[in-house]
Amino acid sequence: MRITRTRKAGTRLAAGVLTAGLLVGLAACTSASDDDSSDGAAVTAGPDGTDDGTTLTLWTRAPLEKQAKLLVAAYNESHENQVELTVVPNDDYVAKVGAAAGSGGLPDLFAADIVYVPNWVQQGLFQDISTQIDGLDFKDAINKGHLAAGTADGKEHVLPFVLDLSMLFWNKDLYEEAGLDPDKGPTNMTEYVANAKAIQALNKPDTYGTATGLNCGGCLVFTWFPSVWADGDQVMNEDGTVSLLDSDTAKSIYASWKDMWDSGAVLPSSKDEAGPTWTAGFTEGKVGQMFYPATLLSSTTGFDVGVAGIPGPKGGASTFVGGDGIGVSKDSKNADQAWNFLNWMMSEDAQVGVLAKDNDVVSRSDLANNEYAAKDPRLVTINEVAGQGDTPVALNFQQAFNAPNSPWLTLVRDAVLGDGASVDTDNDEITAVLSQ
Image 1: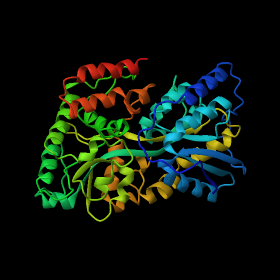
Image 2: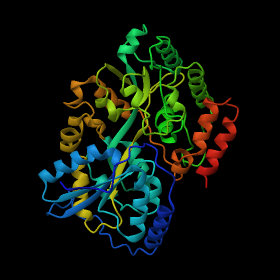
Image 3: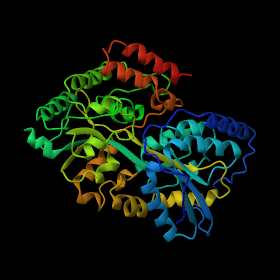
Image 4: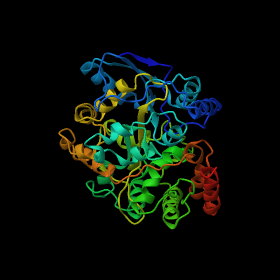
């Protein structure tokens, strides 16, 4: 396996604003697609694609490097086709894709943060692979959030590459010290607040009840949206053009976090945390409970960890089904061979034999309780909660939520660090961006 790295990999969850390079690139590729002059070879081979020794190129962003390397290595070992993987720093990925889109230089396959997928599909960066996906006998078991994000005008363009779920993690050792049941996590936000305060009452040096990223729009989307869904509410309308984050449910969530912040139960550095180290406190055993990425379960060593879905104010459980989708680029002349990789990637050999074996989440619900997950009940829980989660779809998601100084970030900071009086107005600002 040959791997190219453009420079030191970044690890921020929330990417930067859309760059001029991306906008120019997307405009150029849109013009090209309008006259149907793309020279990309449409997928036409049989259900398995073509495995004839072709060299394929694949790009991924740095946070998914581990899973991408495992998948590529396993594919290359078992196929005549060979995939050359390029790992791009997270903060550079959007600009790199945009520049390549404008110049006709996209790789055969590329992965994209699932919140970018709807926009990039609309701009014509991915080829239509509906026929191939419809031909999979396990299609109904594929994560629906990722498929929906890549669907436009009834045509599907991406499959799940790697799923990253937000889950409730708690430190069983700290729970036990605080007199809490170490085998039972909070089932609603009232219990979450009470448990955070109980851990804070231990008065252990540098130890806090909970933590989050209050200056990281992507972190907050990933971990707070599920609390809304758990109570049966939505964060946006179906078209992704109206924000519903001024609902009573949402306001109750903000109030819970403000209560914990004002009481000192939130890790103080959470106030300025912009993403790079937002999980560090829990990983180091210094935070009692946290809404946390499931992909980092293996990093929690040295103490026992409980895992559950993220609760809402009244209860329930949900998760943000994040991660990346992957598809065949508009510029690929090896579409049949690229489909061969995608088809294999969704197979049991890859989902269980590669991803589940490495404690990663599978993208097929019919493989949730596999031989590797069965060895750790927490992995079964993570796989099962994936089916209860959601992936929000909006063309302007990045600008409304993930970008630095996004209106979503303003809303949360006003609600938690301020007096909370501007939620309605701040929500209107989110809608203004979504509806542009």
